[in-house]
Length: 521
Image (cartoon, rainbow, N blue to C red; front, side, top):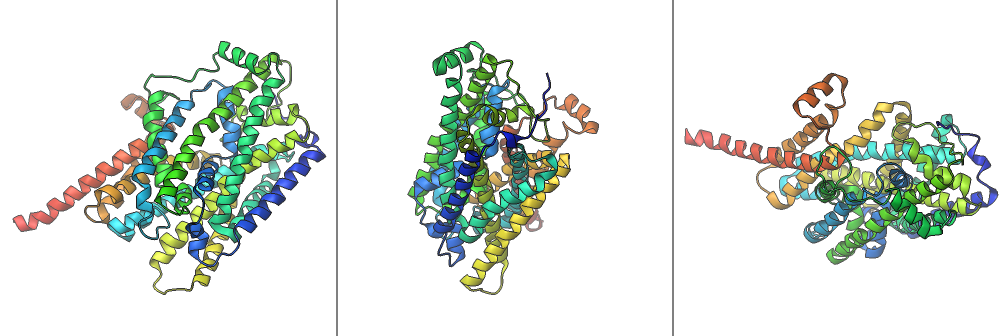
């Protein structure tokens, strides 16, 4: 039976809930501004003076890569037909961090490195650096703007706003994260993200144990019912490029995906760069590896508990809103439960957990995007040495500009459905090119920028084709006939990396032959 959103969510959010939400927002803003005081240079603003404790950075990494969509979307997967199979993808998340901690982190601390794209400049010159940085800016801006929009949809509904009121929600949401990031830079962002991680972890744990307390049989009975219904199924050894989720997709595809997102993407790398030393950077990544598997397991099991709850109370209305671009009906299951089944006060605490997950990803994007513009483009191209005070003012101005741009992208996404799907795919389309470029910079280091730039662009073009051709009406039949499989997103980074490395080597060899030809003649 189809359900629509009935009544205003404001009816479900009481005074005590608003009090909890208001106290959180006031407290987190004050904490962020206090922690970010004393900024005097870009080193303070973008590296936190390299004084951040490894454990805080580890918490921040996990908060940065998760969002309100994790809090909402991961339980929805387990509530639906995916059960616990996403755990296999998270195995790759863990493996990748261990690899990066061992082999890549030492390269970040050779000199005053502000982004991974500096490593390309050291190996091949500015063209390779700007190509990789440009890929990050385009993909990062669209992905962050889309994340803001999709996050605002459940928040908008939960706070009782209508569809036409998405703009003020976007402005308020981005504006809050922008305020402490603007004044305090990455130091404020990392400290606030660390606190926000603890908040949404506590929220997830509370939900996991609270939901089965409402069912017959309690926690033990809920797990027995879930097992009988096949909801605890997590292992799928069958290899597939198309069907989610299987063991090989996690061990291979997700490993490459996270090696890119945590090794070649400024969003995460910037957090590692705030650590005091190589040792602390490694410890931060390893801590995030230790935390990420139980975190996802908590939210997956929360989805399973929601399934048990609604199995036992089949007559309870679930007023699901209509699905929107990028958000399925199941994505509303957890928010609807919070609004309709939780007591006042506790409801506010869970809403705070969702806000914490959402704000952490926005502040991280603002800091990362502004640092790349300032350091990888402006400062590397500037011919005149500016004062530290001028560069700090410029950095804050760039941060403000990116905040406005994220609001704009989020609004445009709400108007044009195709933008949403393209933007979500774009991060996967560029991740292989960026990882391939970084591998070439760290371990290949032969030739000039030409082969590297051509390789990265080729990786982007090929992955764009892999994503688009099976989905376009006028190419879908041809793709199905010739290729026969639509590649699922966890494989994108691996394929893009292989293409980037292969093309770069072929172009380098071709350059060598062309140079040798005149002398041979």
